[in-house]
Amino acid sequence: MANVADLHSRNTDLNPSKPSQIRLEQVSFASKGVASGKKPGQRSAIGAHYLLRDLSFDVFRGDRIAIVGASGSGKTTLLRLLNRLNEPIQGSLYLEGQDFRQIPVLQLRQQITLVQQESKLLGMTVREALLYPLKLRGVEIKTAEQQISEWVDRLHLPGDWLDRNELQLSVGQRQLVAIARALVIQPKVLLLDEPTSALDSGRSDHVLNTLKDLSGITILMANHQLELAQSFSDRVLHLHRGELVKDELSDRVDWQTLRAAIVQSEAKESAEWE
Ligand SMILES: Nc1ncnc2c1ncn2[C@@H]1O[C@H](COP(=O)(O)OP(=O)(O)OP(=O)(O)O)[C@@H](O)[C@H]1O
Image (cartoon, rainbow, N blue to C red; front, side, top):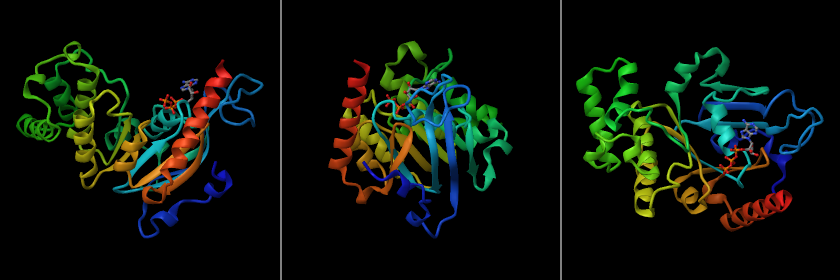
């Protein structure tokens, strides 16, 4: 396992010439109450425990970041922090230099959009669900329909899905719709939580290649499937029990060692549960 102390030095050497788009400074998150000084994953004396601890890193415009780690290492929790579904108990997050807490939450979510693992259409048809965020932004209907049609084409969504509701779509189909819904609003930063876990490999490759080629958008993706993380990302954040243990350019990652570390950590976690 990498030396955690080394990673607490900021990662601006990865991208020295670029200003940071998102910055995390010693961010910690605990499940409830105030956490004690114990390690992430360990319960404190007062019942709370750290789910993320002391995360410091910069995200740069256009980054393609894969967030990897064993199940329960904090990948989803980190994405939720970046979208303000979770609030840190310590530390600060900044978007283009502005403290998250000074940005109205809806405004922040228009710029940093999260596609969660389980997406809901809230009783709408696919067409209505895609139109809704554009209507909220006051986009004229004709323009909105053009934007939707562009993303339906780019993601290869069959046209007959548009009139379906959630119950008429498979889990994988809902994932694709959720990605399209996030893209129509063209956020600055797209957060994806296991976005292709229910898709077959052909569709999954197409979606990830389409996302990879988008210009002007930053993407952070949590993914269990390391081969997808490897082909998609230019940078990898490795979480282990809520700590950032590696922050590296993808072409410098030793993928075999990373895979072995994750497998070992998952085996250890399951042994502790037995
Ligand atoms: N609201 C919460 N309250 C208490 N514990 C939580 C909460 N949310 C998540 N956890 C716990 O925090 C840890 C990290 O969970 P998280 O979902 O972020 O992991 P993950 O790396 O995304 O896992 P997976 O790969 O299985 O999706 C887990 O131990 C989980 O049980």
